[in-house]
Image (cartoon, rainbow, N blue to C red; front, side, top):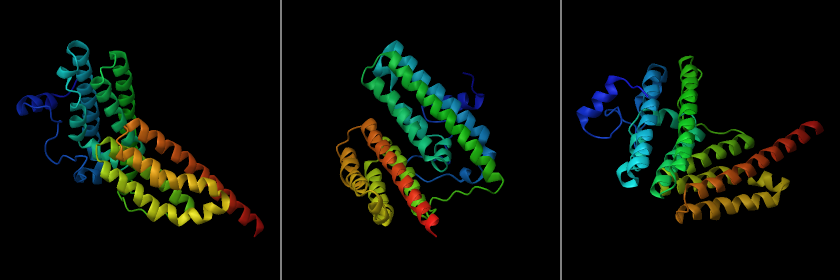
Length: 268
């Protein structure tokens, strides 16, 4: 893949494996950069960063194939991702894809560290690339909406109905997977507890009327299964599987509440 001279010269001049942008970097555990307030002006930059990331990961996999895991330095995949502005652009706009990128990064890294066949590493690489391109498309759309005044960056949006609350919890659970994949288990656990205490508890009374067993299952998920998987460091796949199962239960909960509301509307 061909890249701009800017990237090549930056890497040579700095003599390191950091990302192409060394000022105003938005890291996983740092502040969101000002660029997210005018994403349209940074689309070309984001595109170059995605291409750069894909090229860096491809180089790591090529090195693994030729020289083995030690020479490949698979841990660098995360360093590269954290060094680009695109990181925060997708985090602030579409958390499910943000989580899938982290899963892809660790899919490649762990496949190499575990000595998996190159074919399996390439499979993980393809999934990562698909997530990156999908994310770039999502950011481009968000940038257009932002330019039209139809999008603002606001992490404190408050759900106003029970079904909106449950939908928001699903998004928060995607963030749990992302934070766990980022090796931030305390933050992941805090999101779980906060979603349960400040959101789910507010709607569970209505849900109990529809399906008490479903509510009990979700309570166990929130308070036992998911926090324990994080605390025991069972791995991204295990945490993601629990989250996917919980999201399925939340979808069922939304359906039940919508049906109940429809029944009440019919009566009146």
